[in-house]
Length: 623
Image (cartoon, rainbow, N blue to C red; front, side, top):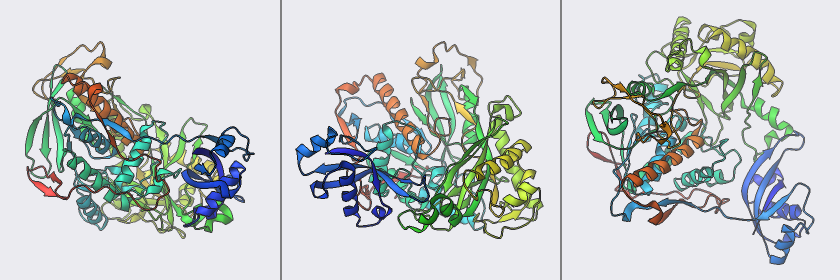
């Protein structure tokens, strides 16, 4: 079989039962008769809309020809391949192989994984598959209960500060578009996709250039990942928060876990802890600072959600082809580099989506965006953000970025209330009013999708002046890149403050955090400074991971980082226990990321029905 890149496909090839069109396209690309193509299947497919008069798909295919000699001729460039087509031998991707400690005579003590977002879930899954029996703790609720808590808040109910759009099983990415694009080139990315498909994600994420799952399907995928962790010997506790660390001479000895509902605490002995707490875990960042962890301020972004009619975006991107059923809702990704040196850009664009209520603290308004799998709401939204750096924070304190976020979120809450809104309604303004300095007029084209409702107000009352000035300049610049982006009737909804973490918990080459101070009686106790002349060689046992500690920016990169950290955690734990990983057998986990890539439906894993999770009070509850 051969790998054929840059194959042009007509849009009709994206419709059901279009195998014949794909076969013909493969033959044209290779310069052979269609009858010689035994089979052709997708490895990757993207939309090419550089010319709106010629919108089509560009694909990479794995092709089998009926004559091996013809395949060799194609590889040697002797069949008259179409211009730009590249041909190479096909090498199927192997599944991820995990060292199997189940048969080891001495297994290391089980690690604790803090946070059940993408990074924590995939770290725990890897460790569970390896036989490490991880304890995964999450301050929020199981994803099924979490969905109900979010729905109650959307209908006007009370905010649950422990289980909401930011906190709970699946992390903040569960209530997003479920986008699986990433800039990381790690080979682990294809293993993440494969494991997601095994857990019930649609199989097409294996070949889509811009794969997405959608919030409605992510709920089931997350549940199946949890069930797999439990089936492999791991334990999951919800409503459970990391409240303290026990350190001795800079090394972890135990973690104090607190049930957020009963406030009961338990000290759990541990030599390793994966810190995958997410970007909104402000109390955990305070804990790490108190423990003496090396931390630094980190740049992040501030802004709003901007909402347009989806049809406007479709026409701007695809022209007359926008009605073709194979295309679906169009997306965009825009950036403007301003003369001031600031960047204004769009992020987490949600085609056919909605703006969501993403508050996690009392008295603060936060917005985000999400889409369901069908992307069929008829409206498009995206974060419209301005980059901010430590120089904008107003303080040298390592947590100054968090303070800035909190001030803006509270200002948005107060702005909406002052304009006559109810609690957690969001301030909103049309683009036309924002650019002209007016406020108070509703959009004639967009009915804001924010569930708790918006109040028409002046966004300059809750965002820093430098952010608003950059947004105004950026809107005009981005309109030149996407016609209609600065349409006067588009709606801006504030505030978006949680695009990424404003702090980084430093880690060295060992993937572990180092501590400039430690206390044998706990993080809050008195501590003496320690000498860490070689922090990268330090074994503290604490592994910062994912988006919260500052090492990822989205579902895929967070999941990949979780796997990298889990590999390091396993390697160090085995060495300390005297277990030779090289001498152990390995287990193939997940299917090959490009096998059966075009099959419809999901190869959904189902864990045994007896699998259970601990609810933080010592009891098991069936899932």
